[in-house]
Length: 162
Image (cartoon, rainbow, N blue to C red; front, top):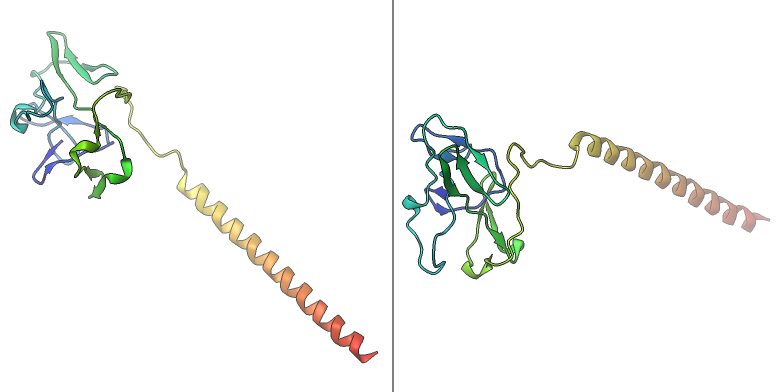
């Protein structure tokens, strides 16, 4: 996507249409279409924004192609990275790729699912309560170990008295 700080990447897929008819993120950043032609010759970002026809229903294929009843509109820029750890987080849901050779150009397997938004597979409240339960079990075991240690100390001292 195009931001005031340059091109950024996101996994957040909830897009909307701004008043100019462009596909944008929740922060208002313009979604970019796929690079046309040679990857070494960069197309200007202003030419890569995805503009949708007014009052038309669109559909998106698993490959990121955008269609309306009139035909194809464009293709979302779907990018995969060779090393995900090379990305740097910026803000709430944006990532920066500083190494251009980190972009994987062949065998891109990412699929777009229209009508779905990726979410976490973790229930934070449930996990927090399980963490508290585990902590309490740990404390109880620690108290039992201390009790056995004190008992062993008394036994050693009492045997010395005999």
